[in-house]
Image 1 (tube, one colour):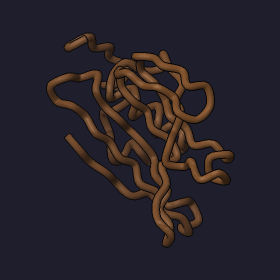
Image 2 (cartoon, helix red, strand yellow; image 1 turned 135 degrees about the vertical axis):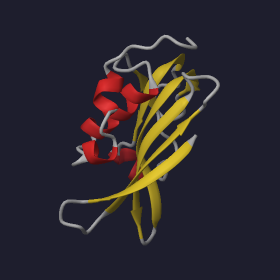
Image 3 (cartoon, one colour; image 1 turned 135 degrees about the horizontal axis):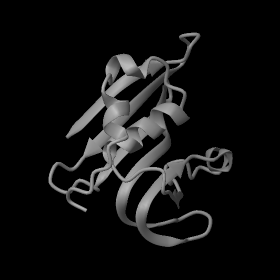
Image 4 (cartoon, one colour; image 1 turned 45 degrees about the horizontal axis):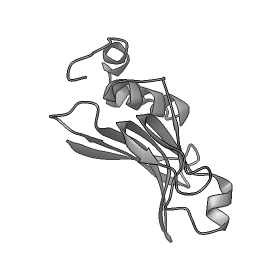
Length: 131
């Protein structure tokens, strides 16, 4: 499953896209992210990923197989490594719904309840299906 939706900054001057990808067969394989779009192109600001193997390429070269969050850091914008996002493991979510809710709250997406009216209730229900 794939979907994207566009958001704008409160003053209307900046465009962002929330994107998500979800494997309908293997439930712990998913990605939810926020992308900034300008006239010069796009850059992924963060990505909340499901459980899969990952190895950091920029800072610590840490390797893990867990749920994790990728963040874009200022240094990456200045040294042209912006397309490579290192990650940190997280215990904040174990489901797609929980990851989507975390991203919407962390990134301060206003009025997300209008788009996802049942998300908060779904995210609080723990599901071990497929895990």
